[in-house]
Image 1 (cartoon, helix red, strand yellow):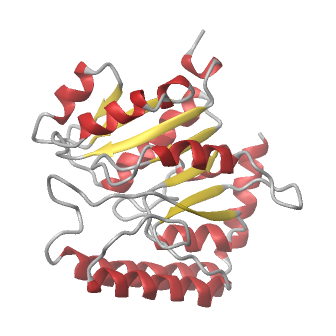
Image 2 (tube, one colour):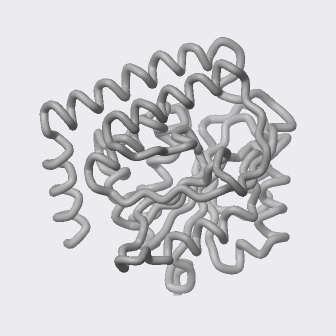
Length: 264
């Protein structure tokens, strides 16, 4: 019997040089009994430290990139793995310890809970900025960027997404099947741009409060001047999505393709 005959949830953890954090995350998965109802896949994005060795020694499922391909590419590999192995749900979380493991059960339950019309969410976002979320400090630059992205999503869709850059997300099969396909996912920074695209394609997105912590060790991929570069890149990407989906009407065709493939 395969792992997926018993468990329908896969937790995906992209990791790059997280040797000081990854053991704490894996310990929490075991101590909070997440491993009883979910499988875990760590994607080591060609770390130069001992991340690969630590995960392998802990006997968690592990895929290692030969070259550093970026955060988005690591996630997409996880989606392809989930499709191949027949999982129904995916929850993605960071390897740096900022995403508390207690969020996994909450997001998992939300994915399986219908709304008043009987519709299940396609995507569940763990938010830092909703009532009930734990306090989380961010720099002024990041706060401005998040507000800008949220405003742009609202302008394009009429939806208010409080935390459009959260990496803590739950996805149903339809969603990660779409993400797994060629040219349907940002290989570097799949954040507000992807949320905007999925909203325009008709995917149901739910945002719930989340418990998050500050990074204890190592450097974030958004450290130094990177937040400024990220803000400009993401703004450009969001504008491109609006042009492609709203003006050129690509979202209708993309949504129809996703439904057809999902029903096969």
